[in-house]
Length: 367
Ligand code: NAD
Ligand code: UDP
Ligand code: UDP
Picture (cartoon, protein in one colour):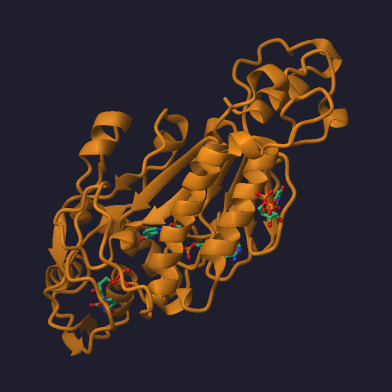
């Protein structure tokens, strides 16, 4: 366990030197960057449910306060408006780093992947926190191997319109692994030769034991998430599932780009905590191997919302990957993880949420 995690536990359990009676598990202090977004807000719910204290760091570029406002007033929840491109000082046990515009419509405008990831890695290194990066199936680019295994290096255009995202995430993975391999030698030593990235005064006491137990490698985890959908997705963010669902509900035609024969594999929002708590760095593909062409997806949306919904064809975007499907053998074997919710079961849950948000029943944030 990270040094800080244990020392924080000592500090917070140890007021007066006694562990309060009846306290079984010490909740962790966890930062979720991008926690006001779609995936992040579901993760925050699970962490709060588990008894952890959560600090959401978000600049609301695509996220919404509504996604997390049901936690306002909970002393274990904090929300900080902050752009991760700027440095940030916090004392925490774990960092889930999700902050990043994830839709093609938004991600062209932002250097978050590289600079934001560097800052959060710097933070993790300083306090000895475990760091999880939400990378993406986009690192495989327009894949020449199908399905994609984690050992495949990908086929990515380094100067294309999507490069800010896919090359950005590839760089974020590189940085994460470099910090993992290098942090042991980079950590600053204090006058006693202890690895102490944080303020010794604040944490000094009989149980200060960072010297003996400092990890030689920074603890990192990498998830390669495949196309995810679910309640709280940004309605007009341009991704295909949100587009089709919103269009069908608004009685507009479904916009199929290109010939609609390109494939994606869609997973309902789940995962991540198993990876953070496990023993393996990854990268791990987290996705649903069920593969659909965009026309097949349009048909599922028609069946779910409106069988009469029309389809219109629009020109495809540049460098659009032709197919994508995860091989999740590694996640199954090493994490014991596999998706539980099929598209036919998950889509109606998202439709319910979109219906409420589009037609003005403002009870946001269903899950
Ligand atoms: P989202 O847009 O709903 O959430 C991203 C969040 O990050 C938003 O709340 C946004 O406001 C915040 N953010 C963006 N830039 C920021 C910055 N500079 N500083 C602070 N906050 C910032 O997207 P999502 O689908 O929830 O994606 C979350 C993560 O999962 C992203 O890292 C994304 O790349 C990854 N991912 C998502 C999918 C998917 O299909 N949803 C697939 C692969 C990977
Ligand atoms: N950083 C941060 N919070 C911290 C520690 C570091 O935001 O608590 C940022 C820091 O500003 C720097 C980046 O993380 O831009 C990388 O930090 P690191 O210490 O690894 O590198 P250095 O500062 O030595 O270049
Ligand atoms: N797409 C589509 N209609 C839309 C939006 C997207 O046919 O209204 C297609 C897009 O061309 C791509 C696929 O759906 O082939 C998935 O696009 P998305 O942006 O959701 O995810 P990504 O391309 O990042 O996997």
